[in-house]
Image (cartoon, rainbow, N blue to C red):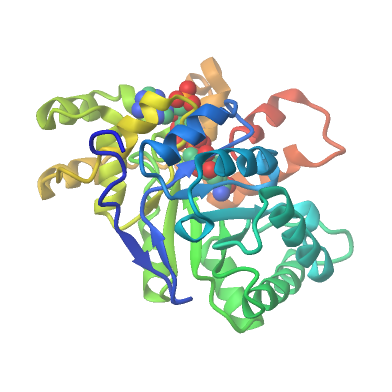
Length: 325
Ligand SMILES: NC(=O)c1ccc[n+]([C@@H]2O[C@H](COP(=O)([O-])OP(=O)(O)OC[C@H]3O[C@@H](n4cnc5c(N)ncnc54)[C@H](OP(=O)(O)O)[C@@H]3O)[C@@H](O)[C@H]2O)c1
């Protein structure tokens, strides 16, 4: 392994009895996929946790990269996600098997419901979520999914699931970076033994040019990306930065040999302004649109699923949505 790497990466215990490495490698349909970078992450950086989703379209490509890396299946943590077009009891079980087949694995370490909204005609979202979660519980009990969880769920969704289902999700994966720190949701998850996993830890790169983060990077002799990743980890958040560049993955892994002092953690904690990273995709417009104010996460989710729906043909919202999932 090259100097530093993800060596020393701790893992957080889940209610499933498994432990999730706090640092993983993100993948996405947005911003490209690099086979060489994934192989490098596994072989040279010591990365053992990969986050993907059916939606990202790279599960089969990951199978090739994992095979080439020669890292043993039992040493890896693989998370993938159920896309909303597959929600419902039978579809969920089928989609899980298909994801396993594309990934070339016999089980998933973590399977997540990607979004709380379903848009199934004639059924409420709550009803579809409960049916879907029923299948997730079965997949967990059969051992096909060693841990199960949700993504982009708000407290209200988790409360409904508590009333409708048996097993509490082991993980909730939600956007988390210095501009987006949903502390109430983090606290709620902790109170119910749901591990909080943060996506977009670099705010899609936008956090890396913020003057306060650059200043902290200079103070610690680190890079802005390392400051953001280390801050998430120090806040007890599992984090999954994505990069398609070997040297950046190497950089993003070198976060286990320094500590950000408590008062500097507080500076970063204080940067939350409620902005969601997908707004980065509004480009120039973001400066003239009154959207920098705190947006309700549920409005954002509805907005993005509307944009994802097949009837919607506009490209503007579609572009924003593609950055969000
Ligand atoms: N559950 C969900 O709904 C959801 C939504 C979004 C994302 N996710 C997951 O979270 C992962 C991470 O989120 P994300 O990819 O959206 O955002 P991110 O990790 O915050 O940022 C990724 C961007 O930062 C750049 N980057 C990475 N490391 C860098 C470095 N050291 N210096 C400079 N630039 C760097 C990458 O470019 P290069 O590739 O060119 O390096 C890429 O453009 C995703 O891959 C996915 O697995 C989940």
